[in-house]
Length: 323
Image 1 (cartoon, rainbow, N blue to C red):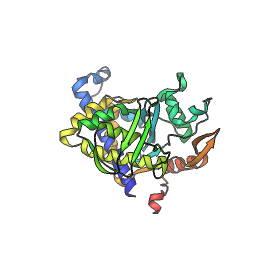
Image 2: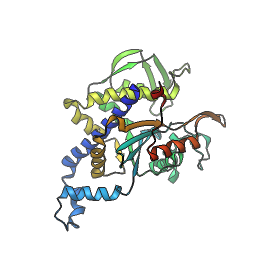
Image 3: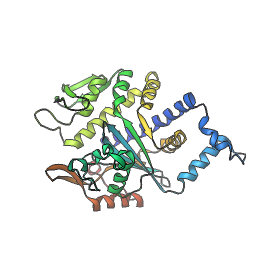
Image 4: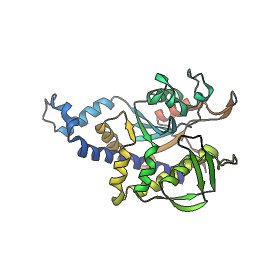
């Protein structure tokens, strides 16, 4: 349960920082130009802020659920895929994670391209964030209304800007891949230490050692370690002396289908959520070898049941809650 709470703290803090970043960028760079579109329809006595809020409520108010895809980009692949499903009536957010090795057989002929993390880099219209959103929608059987992509290239600069991040490395990590883009050389010692930007990237990208041994719980363990890193980074990044630097650099590596007003709208809506109204889940399924390649084969029936229950307001019991 403690791990889930940590995960939820990450999500909530990111949303707040996104909202703050939107306001900062709006004030500094846009000088109110995004409000020009409303001047032509100013037929009421509403303030500019009230008119913006009315437009956003009209845009999203007809939907009980708004689903936002959050994708962490690493080169031509998505290293992280999560859907933030916000129930407006119950004021609940459900975060559904999609494993990066999830098998997708939706017209991708090359077996290596059938992992969901490879869809983003697929050539032509079958690739990119819109195609990724389409495939995630099929896996979860829900519509995707908006998306946010985060480029990990800026992580190193952010970590260095805030003076490093404290991490407890659970075991020695040694791995070399000269053919990776960029080349990957990881050599981290077990124990608590302050990671600079370069070592932070090594920690986040590690999946196995040169010997072939994986960390505890495989990819699930990797996700948990990344979560712990992000918690530590956010706690340090939101300190008054670091916040402006972290936001300025972070803005350069984030793209979204939402404009600044929309980002602020959701940030405002979600900032006041209680812990018990934020839940985290993962696509259901198991590992399977298909055509000689390891995939995560999602259980379509069980996943649909999970989504159905969430939409009906039935909260599933997680393994952590059972413990």
